[in-house]
Image 1 (cartoon, one colour):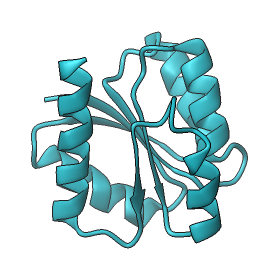
Image 2 (spheres, rainbow, N blue to C red):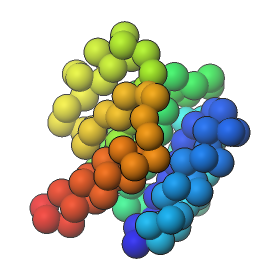
Image 3 (cartoon, one colour):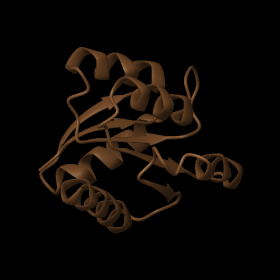
Amino acid sequence: MAKILLVDDEEAVRTFLRRGLELDGHVITVAVDGSDAMDRLNETGGAFDLVLTDIRMPVMDGIALALAAKRDYPELTVMLMTGYADQRERARNLDTIVADVLTKPFSLAELRAGVAAVLERRAAS
């Protein structure tokens, strides 16, 4: 069981992802954009096992969030999601701070497996 900060600007997507991750026993906190996510991180002192964030969002996108979160909480594990090829290319330059990038659309099984793999690598390091 992990504490996951889930960040996506679409309510239906957040709800779907939250429910899927809760099937594996994870405790999920949601944020509607990168700025909201930084508020959640600062409120908890970065006490999350994983930040799972969409890249394309208003206010603060997922890449800006990943950079700010890793700057303030270097031990934090960050995983990105995107449905846009150009955004995935932007994420390639972040290999040192991003654990993985899930390409949308993905199935619930792919999400759960991807998150499990990232959490296993985190536990092993």
